[in-house]
Length: 356
Picture (cartoon, helix red, strand yellow):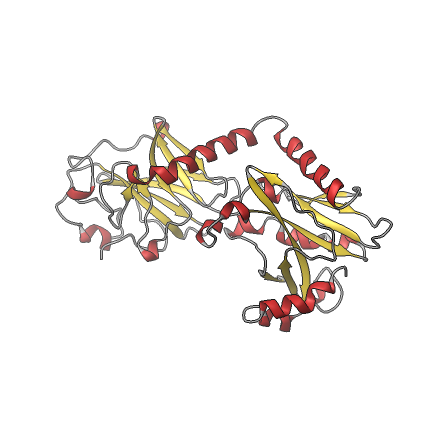
């Protein structure tokens, strides 16, 4: 079956490039005298999603395999385009890019009208292209945008509303006060605060909740991860509204500044790596084991929700979604190896390892 080729985008005239606010995906619109195509690429230039946008010459009756084999953008066959005679090339001055809140999908507008969408679930290897305004029927190069608007329309509208809010003066400060007040009420009074954003989005901080009478350990929590949905959740979870926003937490009797390095490691990971974090997920420490922020010979963390012996920060809602707190439980190399086939048993054995 003729389809887009993987790897890097074919050679063509670059019409437009735009990188998402997290730096993890770039939209590349390319074309030649025959057609224009959009590619969704990672920072290494590898294509993760693609969609045909338009023909600029009369459409052939069948797929031009010679173009594909030469690595050129495909020309849509006559039966798959609303403009079989072709249309003028795209003018970058008339194009607008709108990234989804998660950063894994993108919408492209022409003169204010939706031209195409490459959602996060687009998958070239499995024959799932993006959606194009001028496409007719489901082809390997594009699916019809009009038929998908019931689902994509609200997503695009939500993305526009989100970024409009995010650019509003005082938006982050208002969100920060909201989350900190929630933690004041559910965990305890605030101590120190560290910014672990390292510049750029997402903006994330770490708030310390020092020991108090009746709790002889400090609780640390991220603040800012829940300000934007994580990528990819909807591909694995039927109700992403209950799982797409998280914060991370840790409990320690040691120096909170050491434990805070866990958040420097993981707080921006979902958006940088275009993935998500949830209950039962694990992460292996990326340096040598001796450098792990918590003593004890640990090699990574197991993420768990609802640890009954620790404070319960649940109950926060943002953007209409529930926010889940994931406790970072340190685990050994051997325990990381068992998580995939005995998660419940591992969780039962290590849950009370916190506070460390």
